Each structure stands twice: as structure tokens, then as C-alpha cells.
Image 1 (cartoon, one colour):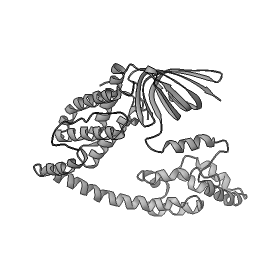
Image 2 (tube, chains in turn yellow, orange):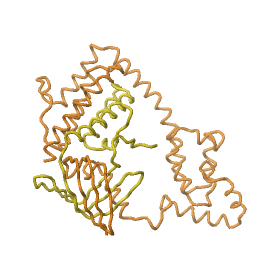
Image 3 (cartoon, helix red, strand yellow):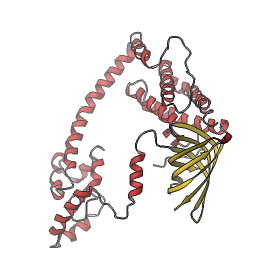
Image 4 (cartoon, chains in turn blue, cyan):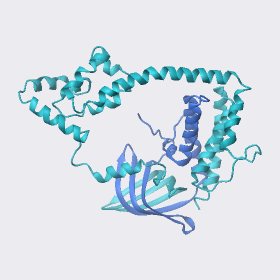
Length: 113
Length: 266
């Protein structure tokens, strides 16, 4: 794996579930932190690839933009009264939502520490 | 529909990850039990989060529910495999032994550093004692005290005594010390940071601060993780094209491959 994938999906439900599970195993001594890192890197790749290959849904989003921020090619939006229109006329509304968007372009290193 | 596909996508991701890291686990010499344990834990948590409707993953008969039998089963593992528990125990005991002295030193220095806002000049006398020599050894100390340090350099100018280990050049210290008016600002500014605990600008937007505080409040803040193709603005109208996103809203997960957003900003 020469290229890296974005790591921010680790903050999603499935990503946090994996991180928590790995932390439990590290604490119990079953695995090393290095192995956990490898698992998370594999997760980044698998999730990104699966999303690209298998997810085809399109959606539109409308709302009132409360805050916008661009830093290091990462946009962060806070949208109020957001409503997502999914396919089959499914609509999701939330009073407030945060959007974190990294620059598109596959396999870009997210962390430049 | 993008919520209905979530279980199958997650299942595909979990299977893919598990299949790929099997090789890594073997390389690291970790048993397959741990691999299966990881998968079980991961699936349990994803199911427990109820972000979509999942089918129970394990049809195996000896796992009626995942949480309870896991414990005795895990304990049973220790008996046929004596070496791992010994290693684990020695590791954990070593860890406990190792962490204790660090903790006490950490706490000792932390106690010193929680004083800072008020007795600015006094702080300078305290650290050199345990550190045997002042500036350089403070920097070389483990990372524990350092999180507390930033509050000190942020304290206003006159308490330059505490800045000696931080970035401001010592040259600024010398001319100030010669000013006779120094003691007065010292007294007043040492009181001010105590109230605010940091340098605050009046220009800070309190709206965003409150939102950030709300944000930290656990897994139920609605959030979207995605990539952007294009973000554009015309006057106060924003348009963006987002790709490959995962939406967590109202406790549920949704996925999209493409999203066009339109917002107005006041």
C-alpha cells in the first residue's frame, strides 16, 4: 500500500466502533498498538473503496449556512435547518449538522503533522 | 434508500477489513481468536449503535447473545494457553509499576502548574527545585506538565518570569525589568487572567464557541464525512458538490456517492 487514504472516516459510527474495539484489545494486551494502526489503515482503504464501488445514491442538501471554514484543504460547514433529499423522495431534516469535507482526489494523505 | 444499503455496505467493509488484516495478525503472531474477538466486538458496537437495521451476524449456536458468553469464553481461553496470560499479567503488572512513578511525578508537577494564573512570579521559584536547574530541564521533562504550560506563556506581558521556558525571547524581558512602572501592571494583569483563564479577544464569536461545546457532546451530533469536488460562492449563496459521504443524522447513518448542496449564508 504505497498511498494513504483519508483517516477522517474513523470518526464515523463504524469507524468509532472499530477504534473502540481495538482500544479494548490493546488494553487487554491482546494486540499491539502497531497492529491496531494497521487495522485502521486497512479500514480507511476498505471503507473508501467500498463506498466508491457500491454506493451510488445521490442526494441534495439545502439549509442555512451558519459557519464555514477552510483550513488545509478541509472544508467545515455548520448548517442549520438542513434537509437532505434522498432518492425515492426520502427527506431527512435536522436542525443542525456539521459537514467535514476533504479535498477530492483519491488517496491523499490527511495527516500532515 | 441510502440507509437501507448501509447494513450491506458495512458488512462488506467489515468482511474486507477482516480478510485483509488476517495476514497482518499472522505476521504479528496474534491468534485467530483475537481476530474473531475483534470482529465480534466491532459488529456488536455497530449493531448497538442502531444506525441501521442489521441482521444478527453470527448464526453460530453457542453464541446466543454476544456480550455475556464472551466473558467466560474469553476466560476459558486462558487455561489451554498458559503463556499468553503470563505475558499479559507480567505486562500489565509492569505497566502498573511503570505508570505509578510517572503518575506521581505528573501529579506533583501538575499541582505546581495549576497554581500559575495567580502567583506568576512565584512559579519561577517552584519548578527549578524539583527539576534541578530551571529552564532546560523543564523542557526535557515528559509531556505531562507541558499541557499545563501553555496557560503560562499566554499570561500577559508583565509576568515574563514564567515565560523563560517558552518562545518569547529573553531580550524582551531585560528592558521591561528596567521600567519602574512594571510592578503596577504586574499586579493588575495577574488578576485579569485569573478571571478569564486565558487571553481572550473581545472579537471572539461566542456563537461558534457555544456550538463547539455542543459539538463535543457525544455521538448524537449530526455530522457528514465526505470529500468535496467543488465549493463555490456567489454573494451569500453557497453551492458545493460533495462526494462519497457518510451522513450521521438523527441517530441513523446514510451514504451517498454524490451530493449537491445549496446554502445561504447571512
